[in-house]
Length: 137
Picture 1 (cartoon, rainbow, N blue to C red):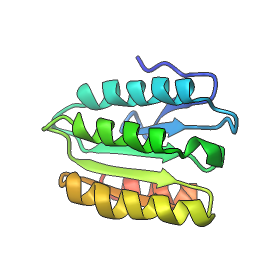
Picture 2 (picture 1 turned 180 degrees about the horizontal axis):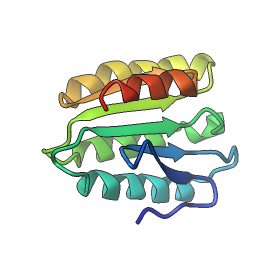
Picture 3 (picture 1 turned 90 degrees about the horizontal axis):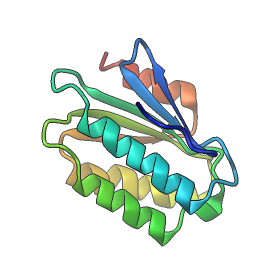
Picture 4 (picture 1 turned 90 degrees about the vertical axis):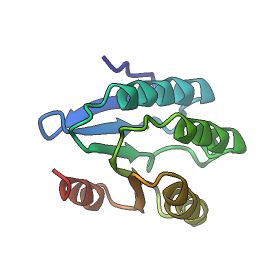
């Protein structure tokens, strides 16, 4: 069972085939982000081996100050703990601003090179992100 935090919420979509992590609170703290990323790790660890991992991360309402070197480091740690059986897609929805273009580079270039079995893509629209994930259902 995934536990919501004060600023982040887990929701299952499409008959529990897509996991959505919504950082809805603009004032999310680093501690809340840590808890949410721990929940994401638990979901990845227990994901069925015969199903594609499909995850929608909605960070379009997250305060820009949350994108710090610490959050980048935590993301890299999470990538390093990726279970070997995991394959699929991760769609990240960001607010369209200059910081998003830096994050997009990190997510789409660096993460995709390191995570060969998981496609990562940045979107500025939730519906487009979901459509892309649903291609793998």
